[in-house]
Image (tube, rainbow, N blue to C red; front, side):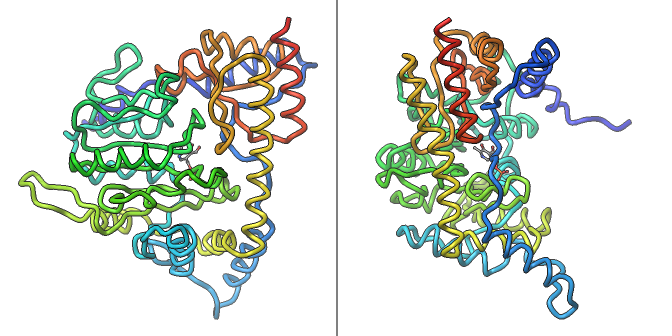
Length: 408
Ligand code: PLP
């Protein structure tokens, strides 16, 4: 009799986006003539930069000739891309990262989800609340949690992000082994300063823990004083793994390309206290279970670093940031407190009422879809997330409708 991994039974139904979809279709059925504007989605809406498209086409053409055709590539990624990443994203910012510490993959979702596999099941884990759900669910699947009660899994140390700590979690009061952090944050849009990030790195060094730093939204940072990578922080090479993605940076959500940085100094311990290289473990895992991102996709990603590619990427992100700025300004003018939207595509709004009620009110009265904060964790209750991924015209229209709706 084949038995299941019963940890899967502990998972909560992924209720958030299916429930949103259900409420939208019910609304559409009841009001077929009303136009809906979706500001709930975390997916980009603008086309790929032309430089990426050109490089993509050229690489596809190479596949059409025996002389230039490529089969399996290196599992860790082609040197042309790893080298660009190491020099442009890290060394140019004074962060000492080598190309052999970069692992190209098909998504930060897979990498942030898979990384836990190389660590023991009985380690102590700290996970933000509210949170991008992948970190939590993959640890539930692996059996690192107990049951779910009152919105929380047993055995997880929750790092609460609230107005009281300006949405940057406080250091845990007791030692933990694996720490998930995400900045600029999804869902709150909050960013972390170098000093605050330094305190996390120091904590990890003191406790021999490891930080998993998700920087999928790094490209949205415009404030030069903020760290663009955790490796700008002293000592981070010993205790941090960083996840990056071309998804939100360059519109690769449907193309799939990302990377993970595992410095060679990072160590973890076996049951006898002996040190092991995390880089070697991840390399083993990656090359055993993954066969590389396709060649044309890696060429398209390389084009992000060309002169024209950079300008095109920056223009796209500026476009979303202009949307985010408008949302912030209009929401603040209506008397709501919010965070994010300055160095991030998300605006986290204190709706001062149950998240789902606020969601329903915006849908019914304004025809605008947001994401209820409660879907990201207990600390998300009373908040909603608005995303800047839409056209400027739609964002303008949505904000005008929200203004009327809230005044009714
Ligand atoms: N990390 C965070 C915080 C995200 O919000 C997302 C996507 O929404 C991802 C990772 C996934 O990125 P990718 O498209 O590279 O899998």
